[in-house]
Length: 146
Image (cartoon, rainbow, N blue to C red):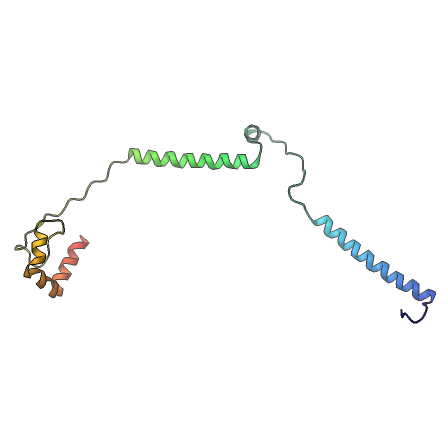
């Protein structure tokens, strides 16, 4: 349809039919989309609970309350089991400290750090020999693994 001339009766009807068809298609598409869309949280009627659900829902009517009660129950069970295992378990035996050896008995292996002989070992020539010998260091490392 051009603006410069007046449309005839048949052209006018054809243009109106095209507009009507376009409007009908869009309305049908909009109605289909609106009927499929769901609005969450609507005002649905409350479900009828029976059996144990009814007893529980009488005490905790909301979902968040029931979820909190379940999580609290599990947390309590875990805490009680942990406390019980701590109370009933026997204390771990303390490891037996290795007997400290004197510097003269084993020049290859240094005495324990907490022994009285350690300071004397560090200040002696045996410490320098120990550091210079890879074999002595490897023997000492092997004793650490035990």
